[in-house]
Length: 127
Image 1 (cartoon, one colour):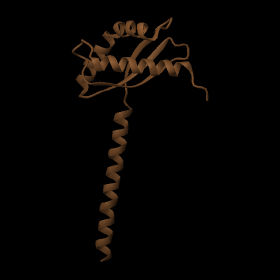
Image 2 (cartoon, helix red, strand yellow; image 1 turned 135 degrees about the vertical axis):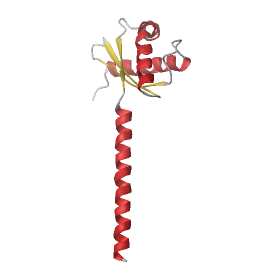
Image 3 (spheres, one colour; image 1 turned 30 degrees about the horizontal axis):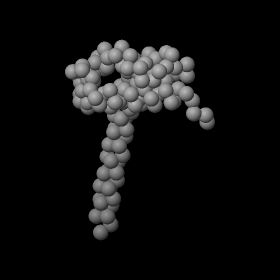
Image 4 (tube, one colour; image 1 turned 90 degrees about the vertical axis):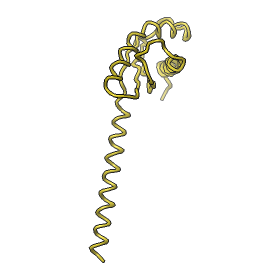
């Protein structure tokens, strides 16, 4: 499979936005955020930026508002750093895959504990 330009641009956007978040945006609503992935359309016009955030539902909402309000600043920065004719429109989306993975992991642990409990009951009955 060919490595598309959109993948390279996505990786560059991921790197630049992550470094800006490490340096710190001035918006207090943006707390501890991790950029998990960036998907860029093949025409390079739109980029979905997936993020995760530590905290509860209210922290997620505040962070999303802060990220959306910082889009013009981020696009200006990306335009200077990436030197592209068109800087993709940024769309921030919460990455639910981490929660999904944690849920599956807890279910697997629960099943394993139930199996271990069943095995211990079986060995007691055999004795």
